[in-house]
Length: 420
Ligand code: AMP
Ligand code: GLY
Image (cartoon, rainbow, N blue to C red):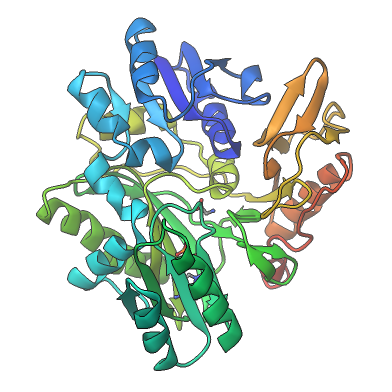
């Protein structure tokens, strides 16, 4: 099969690597790809949002399947466009991708279908927002509507922060609505399903680390590291995730006339053993994918083809029993004013067989790689348990350096000590 992957981050590098392992794949392309992906796939110089250009490429190159990594082309309707042209593509339609595109729409969807979620109110003006916020206890979670790559969320613990955030958001013409949400206290879990209508199969759960700093301090980011499997995700909890979140979501979307095909990512807060939906993404997580897919032993290709052809059924997946840890290495200034162009040293140092260095924001010039984005690399290691995977990932990182490099030292650490 000839397959096109759309995107150019660490997630897409991990997708390409998983697809490369399939004996079914005869040609792999990626648009736009990146320096790391170029070692596995033919990179096409097309932006992930250039829907017309991508459709042209799919037609000319006769791709048997296109797999979409990031949310932007999905929200812009790439699946509708490809499907209208009879080009096979795995991902949700524009209508079902709304689940990620609008936090307000998602909140009302969750409420409509009785899916557990934090209590929240919608505000469309600064005055309404402030009035509502004043009636609520702190901390409060403030969320901007719209796609924000996980960054349009502020957890405000003090009044000046609430006021400053609301003022800043409502001063911008882009802000039409915001959510003011109860702050849930628990542990986060990312559960991702390959879904097709009411059929789905859960991938191994992962836990992301959203804050920039060790000990969950500092600003929220797109994700600073992930590990899988997650001790918290017992069979009982996963059964609740299926019954209370994934199934009502898929059935709710069918009932609303927008059945979902694609990766359905439920960002959950686990409070007292019960899952609450914080958000949905309509794609694989980044960096969760870099922790999850290296453990997947089942061939991904037949799963994606079956889901695209609406005959997924309920397959069983085989997983490497080892743990994986992915540590994200970010550029100076991330997540606000990212500095690019720093030379990355040590990428050519041989790493052990259980380590994979996924490229995200890297730029190759000749033989040199430079930082070219916020999250630059994701270093994933497998180990016989979480602690061993952590040790290997951090040992691998010691070989890599650039000016202003940032990474967390505690990915998976909170659990590593409690697991055998
Ligand atoms: P979201 O983009 O909605 O997933 O939010 C980004 C991050 O903010 C989440 O991964 C959580 O860490 C945090 N967050 C969002 N909503 C809540 C909430 N209601 N209570 C506590 N933390 C939250
Ligand atoms: N790691 C969170 C996300 O992909 O949105």
